[in-house]
Every structure is written in structure tokens, then in C-alpha cells.
Image 1 (tube, rainbow, N blue to C red):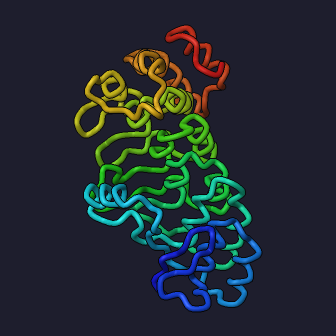
Image 2: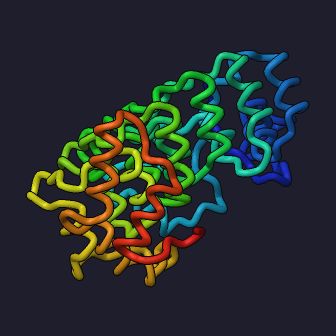
Image 3: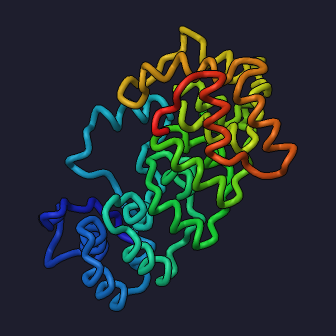
Length: 287
């Protein structure tokens, strides 16, 4: 398979390009959402479904270098055409269906993450739902050799963005509420570190245990109230942090709701959980 330095959506020719390069054309087609063009290329050469994608000129070099310095590898290492299709926000299903039906491997990993990990982290509900419908395991673990996310399930990643919606979707598909990563942290620990009140509420409603400790002996409550934790201000509602601490406190609302869910073997209804939240914490956003 040729090494592809795929062009932008304008279809500009590649370095060394003479009369078009099929691998570059199909990458451009996927990025443009051109289902007809991608279908035509696959009809001519089915092997193009395995096209590898490499860094683009417009990718910020400083971001790539920072990632490489932190992770010890390129962020593009192992990136395939299916990753490009799954990264689309608008109308990804037609392209995903086309690639999957053409033989794209839905078990591929990128730096240890499955396609479902990536969709969960990006808050891409449509892609996550598509992957689950295609039978991608909801409890697959990140198998990176040495990274902070080693052993994470997609439910851990779900706390990054659209935490309540994505957590709800994964749990409805059978995700385990308390998977433990290599460092002992559960998704509830990640929600606490990330300052995600919505995600924590959903996890507790599904029985996530707030008394579990990570490898360092910290509970989600400990992490939620730790002033030394750095959180992304663009993804955290500052006003939610004190509510999150109250929700996760020992013998608090989360503990009561989660215990009831585990005893019943099913999630506590949303309205009932919100009543407990209001009584023990305050008003939950969106209620």
C-alpha cells in the first residue's frame, strides 16, 4: 500500500502526484463525504478500503510534536480510512456503512484505543451508536502499553465530552458501570477528575460505586474535591464543581442512588434520581 500524504478537500495534487493517486483520492473523498466517489474507487480497487492515512500539511506541527513528546509515538500511527470516516461529525453513517460492507476492520486500534473509545471521547453519539449496532464490544479495554489511559473502557472516555448522553448510550448498550483501569480508576473517578457532574449523575444512577478506591487509595469524592486537579476550563462548568463534590460525598446522594440500583439490578429511574439529587445537593442542570 502506498504511503499517502493525502491532500485537503480541495483535491490539490500530492507531492509526486501524476494523474491522481487512488489512495489519496479515496481519503479526499471520505473527508468530503463524497459517498459516490468513494464507492466508485472501491469498485475499481477493493483493497483501497485498507488505505493508511498520514499527517496533513494543515495539521498543526506543534500539536503533533507535543503529542509525540508526551506519548512517544505519532498521533497518526496506524490511522486508517475507517478512522477518517468515524471522525466525521456530519452524516457519517453512509460512509461507515460503505467501508464496513467493503471489508473495513472495525476492530482496529489507534494508540490502544478502539473506534468506540475514539467516538466516546469525541462525544460522537451517532458514530458510537453505529459501532454498537455493528457489534463492536462496548466493554473493550484500551491496550496501550504505557499510557495514562491503559485499561480504560469506552465508558471512561465518555467523561470527556457530552458525558451524560454518551454515558447513558454506552450503559444502555450493556457497558459495565464500574470497569477498573490499570491504575484502578473507574469511569466515576474520571468524571470526578474531569469535573463532569452529568456523567457522574448517570453513572451513579446505573450503580457505579462511589466508595471504590484507585491504586493510590483515592475515591471519586477525593478527586472531585482535590484543589490540585487541573481541569479543562472549556469543558467544565465551574458552578458544577461544588455540586459534584456534594453528590459524591460519603453516604451522599450518589451512594444512596447507586446502592438502590445495584440492589434492584437495574438503573434508578431518572426522575427518582433527580429527586434524590435535589434533596441532597440542589437542582441538577437540565431538570
